[in-house]
Image 1 (cartoon, helix red, strand yellow):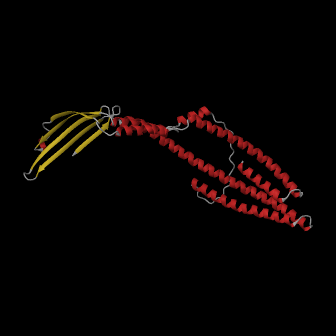
Image 2 (cartoon, helix red, strand yellow):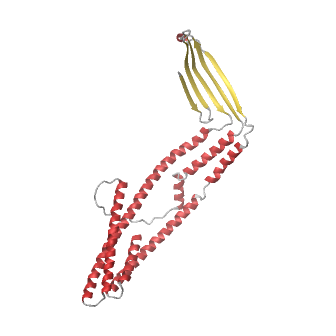
Length: 345
């Protein structure tokens, strides 16, 4: 029976251990037994100038725990982003359906007027046929959008774990005009540990450099221990007269010829620092983000203005179409342009 308890000492990286054992050697020929016992043996082993793995693990472990917490938050953000993106896409399809229905109703009303004018010979049959083609194209597009909308709603329900057959009408999401504070953003990035992976990687590289460097150098080891032992032919008096033992061991490792292996390993370990070094600083990435934000705001403002102007032009073109001053082809082009602008906004 053996018991061995060991613990790494945090500050030194040495190993403290306590062992205890009970042995029975049985001679079956002579039918005798010899009992021996190591009551308790306490020892401490320390590398004088060797690699202390505990020193580096003590730095990495808290960072790993924090990284796991941050990764959990990131996964939640990614899921919210996925839902938000899909919601926006489905809402855009819903808007397409509404616009298509309005355009179909408007074009069908205009088709009725053309058919009446054709009866009295005031227009060519070509104008009527072109308008019918436009109506059919709008209806086919409506069917495609309806199918796309149904599929998108099902995907949303699956992600949100909604089990029902209800038909949902999505509401538009109003974007707030917000500003980004550069200093606050940088502080938030650093505080919330978005560069934890890089920090952990750098510590691991430094740990590997230290390990390679010390493994290729002269190392000294010291071990000291003491304990109580006893032996007897009879188990009843095994623990009557213990004897004390103690030992001190000093060892050394001197690499004499390694064919340049230690030097090569050290060069490889040092090269890892260059590979891991970030290409861009956080300040540069934040500047790019702010520039993108400003550009996006400018694009949105421009699209809103274009949409208003396009709606006005579309209404005027429809009036000119009814007066016979514009063709159905010109009206169709303006219809498509206004449709795309409205969806983008």
